[in-house]
Image (cartoon, rainbow, N blue to C red; front, side, top):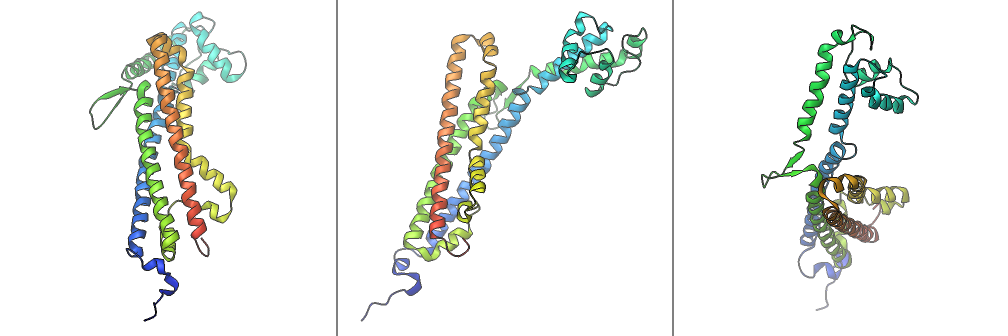
Length: 300
């Protein structure tokens, strides 16, 4: 009897497992990648939040400085007093001119402290006695928080100082990105096999894609934007390393030169590892998009 061909499906479509099995494998790899991406995004948000609150700028310490300077100057009740020098410098940087006594009320209001009367007048201290005490209590409360600047690790129940958060975050990010890279590569191999041997099922794979196929539409601007977004972990950990490098002298004062050099070397190694795996992920994603584009049909 003559051999019967499979028609539009192609003879390769009937060889081995049915096409649905291959589609399911490709979709499962894509879902796994999206789950890892979600975890990466959460870790990035937590890391960036910690960075903004404790490194650049350290909001808590910045508030302590402001309230301390404000308290000293309010107690002096003389804008020309030496205790007001830091506040005069701060106001001068804000206003772009020499500070005057009337600026005190405005600065205090911006710091959410409403003062009464005219600063440097005789009755000013008595009119604002409770406000001055309030400012002192504010920076004392902030100082107590500053001494407990730690992050709790939920699973282990241990705590880590904010200054060492880069170590935990960076190592976790490296392994997450490595797993993401492996998952995208597996998705690429599955899709490539379908494109070469089960082509009639490729449209089903494309319909299950969440990452937009920007290259398919030929919009290079959107493709560049997508690449920048995919490299977000790289930008974040470069920012982390830059923030730590900016406080190099502070580290020297607290832990000494040798330990500082070792810690910066370890941090730099972790950052380079994160960047390397992140780039591998972007390249793997580009390969996957290329296969989908080459094998897609119609509006794909």
